[in-house]
Amino acid sequence: MDKKNKIIIISVSVLVAIIIIGLIIYFVTRGASEEANENKLAKMYDRMMQNETYAVSFTLDENNYYTVSRKGNMANVDTYSNGAHTTHIIRDGNTILLMYSTNKYYTYQNNELELTELPNQLNEIIQSQEPERGREEINGENYRYEEYKGVSYFLMNSSDDISEENTNTRFYFDGDDLVYIKTIMGEESEILQVNTSYQVEDSIFEIPADFQEG
Image 1: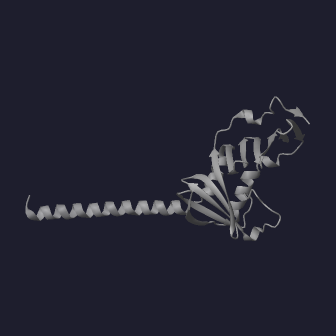
Image 2: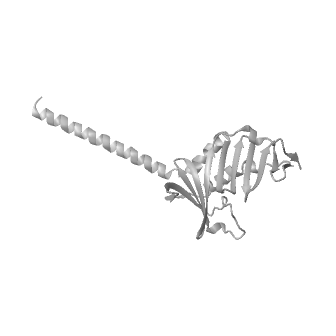
Image 3: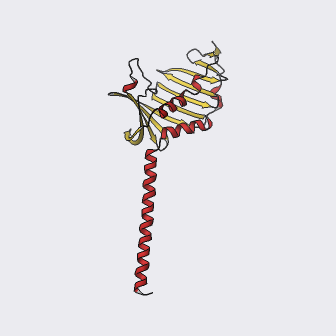
């Protein structure tokens, strides 16, 4: 092979390598840009609604937390408020309130508002506006967040003087997983730790054997 052909082959190889590297950079940058603009809260909502089976836990502290579970036309909202334990079971179009302080239950006929309350709220938030996006460190980890203006639904320690106009909520994600929710009220804020599962046991929709009708 003469010197001229070697130069041509080397030049073509270098050009091909440059094109390949350029394509890699383009697709990586494009993918990162698309991920940064992806609405992760909407993606979570869509997954929740695909088969209507999910369990989402919200924890403020060891005495204040609740879990919303759903499986088809049944739901369970298990709540600890300042240590007091209550559960709402929604099934057959009715709501059953379990009072753990007395081991009694009460049935509210034709009431299933809580069956879809959480997804309805999420959908309302998503449809209301395009979120602001950013990153913030929480407990030593850096998370991507989506912030919605005028949202206070997830505020656990609420008061009568809360103004929706001055209240914003940030949803923090680790990949596609929602891990924290922060409600911001002026100079104050409240943060909830969030855990989500898409597997729910049927037993949580049953009245415990040691409960009596009130």
